Length: 86
Image (cartoon, rainbow, N blue to C red):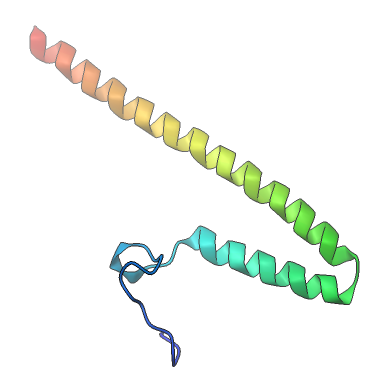
């Protein structure tokens, strides 16, 4: 559902096909929640700090996962090349 006044313009930071990244949506929600928490109490600051650490850990884990997938694809390609040489 597209809200009134919102549009999906190509080249506006959205992914191809008009889909937002789930990471960017969750990052926006985390930031907004932290800012609201800052207005309520000091716990909002802890929320922002620990949330940032969590985001950084998730980025590292995603990078490791993608490196693993790439290595598996390259291994499959190299194995195919070795089988075809016989």
